[in-house]
Length: 444
Ligand code: ATP
Image (tube, rainbow, N blue to C red):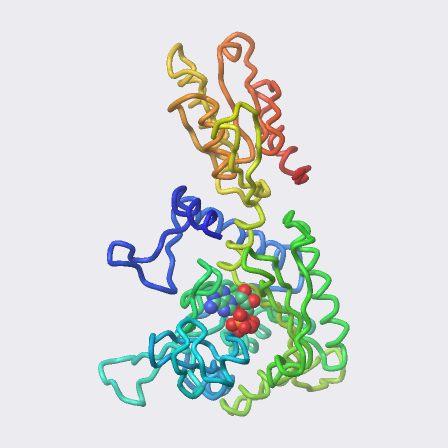
């Protein structure tokens, strides 16, 4: 993880928030390469969930919601972590994350000092809206995006004539006052989620749940993720949320071990039932194709962390490879093997030399490619070094313009993964890249 964190900083993927003031824990800033990567991951998910499904539409709900929302959802009462403090070293722990023997002996796992009793700590960030700081003005930063979908479900049925089964997809920020925020961007106080809520007829929920499990697994396969680094984890009765009928997590083998990446949950009719109760509005679905049958839909949720997916993709792509045997540091390269659809830069254009018109020719090629691809241009330093820089940024293709290019109009196309180089006529470059991206298969 240290290597990934340091590469992420060095190459401008992720910076610590407010670093010049010593950093703000639980918050991170996405630099030039990081925002491109994050946007592409979000784009791939959005395409998968909306464009490729006839019956799923998008939503962008506000972060600030009526506080009754969070009473109805159960967050005010139940969204808590058990917390213990060490009286000696002042460290704070989630009681469910320290060894049982420490908890029962009330002994700090760090310094051996005495631990306090366990108390409940609500993870929602609370603030006040308007000038008065009283209970009537309390407002929460949303701890999940899902509730914004539930409260809009009737609006979407009416405005878009949706019929069950249908889904609503949303990507957005969520906030949790997490007690432990180590492991880089894995668990943060400010993060982004990609959630899809699928509304189904009760009785069909188990089949739909299994179908969504299949689809979410296939999605990661399509992204080129190492499939032996993914596994399912079914929630046991002690983990299952009070409203859930069944729940599975997709876990990824992060450097610190197997951890949750995404959850697929059968949330039953709990959420709509509660919103109906708390708002006084009827949340039932009226099935006009079936004698106006009324029922409260069940909800199958797929809930993934976007920022956690960024970390997963960084870990999954990271590789160190021996490329020569000269006995020095240059023998090794660090390479991020991103799928070309996710890579922050798709193609880098590099003139072999700055002089003799090569730079101008390279810049013209870049301009042409820019319309369709995320490009970079680099003319500084030895060509081998420049390839290494692009490998480290995860750029799948480099185009090099050399003296032969001036003579016969061909350029070198270099592949990141194999480091193979071929000559391609300049005029065929854009089409060739399209084909390479479409047929991409990860080789290592
Ligand atoms: P945990 O048990 O690890 O706290 P959770 O089960 O509460 O997580 P969910 O509420 O199911 O998580 O959230 C759905 C997804 O949102 C998670 O799978 C994860 O990818 C992401 N997520 C949740 N909390 C955080 C966080 N603090 N930082 C980054 N991503 C998060």
